Length: 107
Image (cartoon, rainbow, N blue to C red):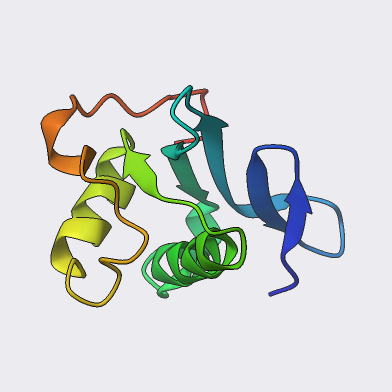
């Protein structure tokens, strides 16, 4: 997939311009970010695309020397499953926050 980086999101579109996958995040006052939404187009679900966009997100975090929390339930669970491998980008506040994924009709 061809990943695009814009203000507060990483995403990919197909040749028609349809959104195929997206991770959005907000910047927190403490200099960290919060991943608040991960979306995969229904035609790609079950093919590992959500995990791939999370790996792209981790690369972004590492390149920008950022730590993250995740209020998105998918992202939060993904970090919990992969905590050892990605501990360098996980905020100490990750497990102390409510999970409340932003839903905007794309699910």
